[in-house]
Length: 406
Ligand code: GLY
Image 1 (cartoon, helix red, strand yellow):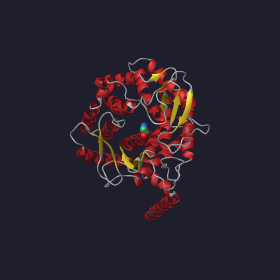
Image 2 (spheres, rainbow, N blue to C red):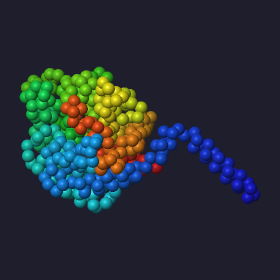
Image 3 (cartoon, rainbow, N blue to C red):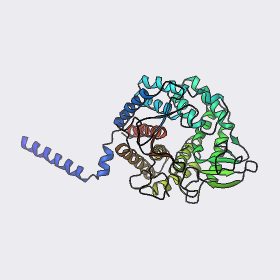
Image 4 (cartoon, protein in one colour):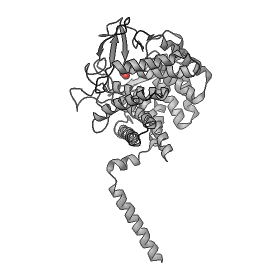
C-alpha cells in the first residue's frame, strides 16, 4: 500500500513537472510577477526621494537626467506639480501607512494657490485632480473637495463655446497662430476634473463642457486610421478648424506616443463618466492602432515615426500611462476576449517596465527612459515624475484586477 502511495505521488510530481515544462517563458514570467514587491520598491524609492527634497519654495521633484542622480525640483505652477503628491497618495493607498498620507497631504496643500488664481492653462486638471482628487477619494476631506470644485470652475474659464473645447494653452506658442484657439490631446485627461465636479456639487454645465470637448476632439483630432494629432488650431470666433499640427511629436502627421496614450486614457475615462458607448468604441479604436504598431517589447519609441528606430529613445511614461488605461479599459469591455487581451497586454507592459526600466540604484525615481519633449531637446531618456505616477497607478489597478479574479 505504502509503495502504491509513493508511486502515485511520483506520478503526480512527474505530471506537474511536465505541465510546467509546457508553459511558455512569457506565461511563466507573467504568472510569477509580484505586484506587491514592485509596490514595495516604489515605497523604498519614494522614501529616498523624500530625503532629497529641499526645504524651499521649489519642492516638487520633476525629473532626473540619464547621467545624473539629482532630481530637478519645480514649484507648484509647473504642469507636472500634481504627480508627486499623487504618487504619495497612491503609496498611501497601496501600503495603508499613515506616513504617506501625511506627506501626500503636505505636498498637495502646497498646490492650493492654483485653485484661487486665474487659469494658467488646461494643466490645472493634472495638477489638482492627481493631488487633491486622489486625496479626496481616499480621505473624504472636505477641504480638498472645496479646492477641487474651485479648480474645476477655474478650468471652465478656458472653455470656448464657439469652438466647443477648452483653450489648452492661453498664450503664444510657436506655430499655434495665437490668439486663435488651440486644443491639445493631453487636455482630454483634464475633463475628469469637470465630470467629477459636475457630480459632486459643482455646476451641471461642467459636464456638458467636458462632453462637448470630447466630441469636438473626436471629430477633429484623429486621422481615418485613428492615430491622433497632437494639436488642433481653431478660429476662436467661427469655431472652424484651421489646421492640425504637432508640438511634441516628430512631425504633424506622425503618432506621438504619449499623445496617443492621452487619447486612450482620456476616452476610456470619458466612457466611465458618461456611459455613452461611442466613447468606449473610440477608446478601443485608438488603443488598437497603438497596440498594433508597438515594438515587440510593448514599450513605444517616443514617436511611432521617429526616423532612427530602433535607436530612437523610448518613452516609458507612455508605456506606463497606456498600461494603466488598458487596465481600466479591460474592466469596461464586455467582449471577454477583447477584455482579456487588454489585461494581458497591460500586464506585459508592466512586467517589461519592471524588469528592464527600473531606476533602482541609478537614482531614486521609479523608472528610467522617458522622453518629455524631443523636438525641444528636453527630457530625453530621463526619469520623469509622470512616468512614476502612472506606473504606480497601473500597479494598483493590476493588483485590484488580480484580486477580483482570484
Ligand atoms: N502634457 C504634456 C506632455 O505630455 O508632455
